[in-house]
Length: 151
Image (cartoon, helix red, strand yellow):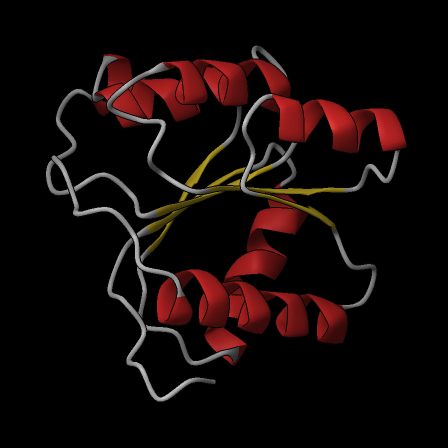
């Protein structure tokens, strides 16, 4: 951990697996993070949340400062959602960390071509997930200077 305080930005996780969402929530709690952790279950909901439309039209406050994105989701997968986020002038500044079970070279190459900020294979143990979440939070919320929050 650096001497810098962690930024108080919301983290938005897009993952269709309820167990993975719960594990991520528990892993972040183990890291003693006070950041708000929000969840959506697919790429369509992710974009609706970011654009404040559909069932998320009433959401208030700043957009999340960090997105954790799974690749394989229903309705709109992570690749499609990432493409749309990085093509949107208002959303492209939000860092997107792909956190997925894939380790395929083709996925890794494609994800970076689409503009992802990081690609991390999901750890298989809870202890490893806690370690990954500590590293992600230290780097993205402690070291990196993020763009100013926008509603």
